[in-house]
Length: 220
Length: 253
Image 1 (tube, rainbow over the protein chains, first blue to last red):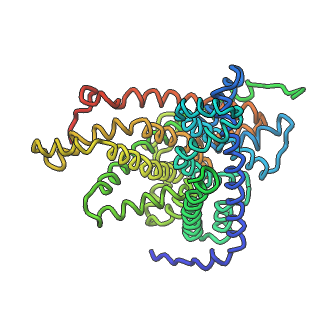
Image 2: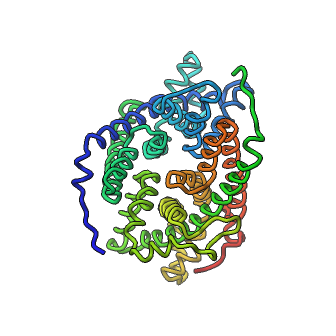
């Protein structure tokens, strides 16, 4: 059996692929920005909040971390309309991906925050910093620095996981690839192209985050 | 949420219950099969990766980079739509035949394109991660251990089998268990190629009687329960750091 490869048939659909890449980047960016904030908030709530809040946040984190992302996404997209909340596929995807990264980020950030030496906090308090200042100026930057490699890995995982959003017809990259192969039956070529694009995206994303983290978040 | 009523019988009775049972069985089977494939792949990759020859390391590094940096969904779709098509035509015909002997208890077909593609995709993806976790565990073993073993006359392979790997496995066991649990959770992606596991069945119930909330709640709890049981079993069976000499992993290569 001879296999004829025809990558041109896939690459000629570049507007679809480009749109897919844009959606993948959009999902990842929103997940990173809001998800990290949510994660930091949850980490603090789980460590310092009242017992009820602590329990609630803990339940949220364990529920998200112990169930598949696709089930979370389906729950939001197919389940919530029954309760009267009807969302577009895109909105559902954004909510699911933010909630997902938030839970994982909370655990990662918590590990970093717990590793802060007590003396640093005491020193900051004795310098009359408010609790908020202590957290944002003294505790958080070194904590983020310690856990940045783990955070970068998690963000890359979320970027790759955003491919699942295609299952509720968000037009991201894997949805585009699947659409192309169902139009022209070039399954091999279109998934190879998608895989290479994801590979490039994750290499670039990793490089960017390793570059941006020290400069923007915790000053070398 | 006024007026929201739950009807659990619509999910936990009649046809939906049968579907869910089939779904749980399928998830368990594909997880177990993926577990075996992942372990084999991890052993092979680790063997290549810890070789001292660059030429042998290189393919393993490439495989690891490619499979870790592309989404599992794309990989599964690739194996199902493209990989399966690359098999010789008579193999495909043979797989698509009826095989009464390849029926697992509960009526889950082992020799179907869906099951094979899902198992293989999950196995390769997880195997790559597991190999890297164990390699990290290997790097965390104090260099003095290796030097001491070599000084006592251990050869390269015996040193690896008796001294380094047991400690590496103990170091890495927690993340390795995490990867096996991840494999179980990720088996939900096989719903995309029509493998009738829990996620697929939940969606089927949802379109059958539109009990979406109940169906997804049950699906979530099922994954949670399977994960907790599986995690406990794996953690108990595995080596613990600090007790590796008496902990029952003195088995050599």
